[in-house]
Length: 203
Image 1: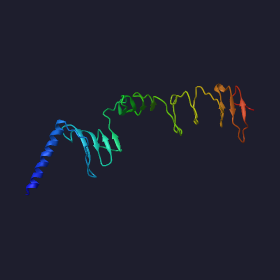
Image 2: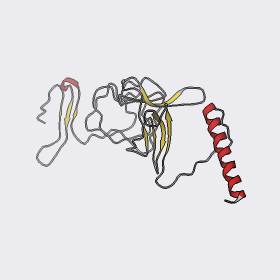
Image 3: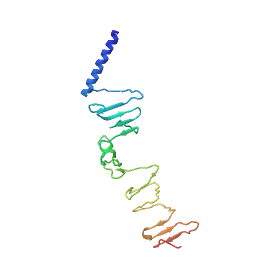
Image 4: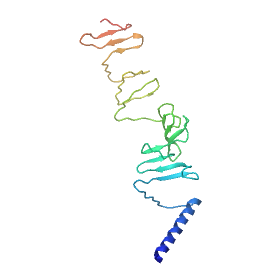
């Protein structure tokens, strides 16, 4: 065996021992730290006495990342530590500690709040430049005091107070509460009819 090769092996043993001691004592510091894995290798950070009996806190696969588990059904997968409805699996806070995004285990999402009361609860203003497409069910899904420069299209909607400063176009039938006013749209077989105090205007 060549002397240089033996010395190289000795230095490698010393380096490995030093790295192990540093990691065990938790004092490892570095400005840049890189781990290069093979195409089928993984990087697993485990809390516990053994890899098999410990808990995976961070697992980096070939193209996926998971937290709290080595199972990765998505590109980023987070396994929460609690199954309680009021607990969260994802929370994002700003530098002031204010929660900006909060995903609770019951499926509710809060923006600007950690107590979302509905599926999506936003503290602030939602601005849409294109529009909203979806299904709304219930009586308290949309609460708004001002809708400006927008088009509202709904198959069925209940509005407490509707104020129109411009023009309004109704393509179907317009009915006021208790049939105090009703206007039927005209068609090929039915002429346009207007009724006050009746739901079946005849003319």
